[in-house]
Length: 197
Image (cartoon, rainbow, N blue to C red; front, side, top):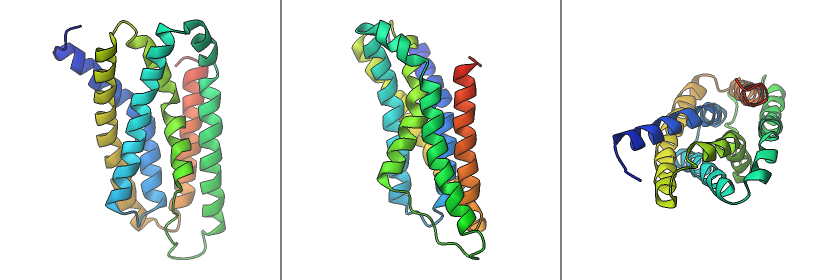
């Protein structure tokens, strides 16, 4: 395997494409917790980056071991993403509606469990990237996964920071808006995966 410009360009483009859902969720997280510290913002970005790197590697391993089981599981990916994001988004939406008349709302703190669910939901479609990198050897697949993780980290950190900045201005409605975004992303992942868009 040659690690040339085309190899890294492909990995970067894969990272950008895969990170779009995670970027939107990061934006919603920043809106939801406008008092978030920089350390937590970086932690969220790294968590999304980890899952975006992990899923293609799991897909790559499945291609090289249990390909027939992976192909039968692939049809459930849009459903899983929809359920996970609808659950988190619905919870944010309900909390936002309950607190919409409270004036300057307290920032909503996202728990680690909710972030894990978001990380899985936004990266589960990256399992299919295992097909894209199936002809890579293990070192090349690992390097591609690291590049995808770095690109995802940068994009998601920008998303959190933009959402946080906007959330300061929209504090009272941020939870409602963030919940709607998450549900919308879940529906988009479902439609995209189910109908092959």
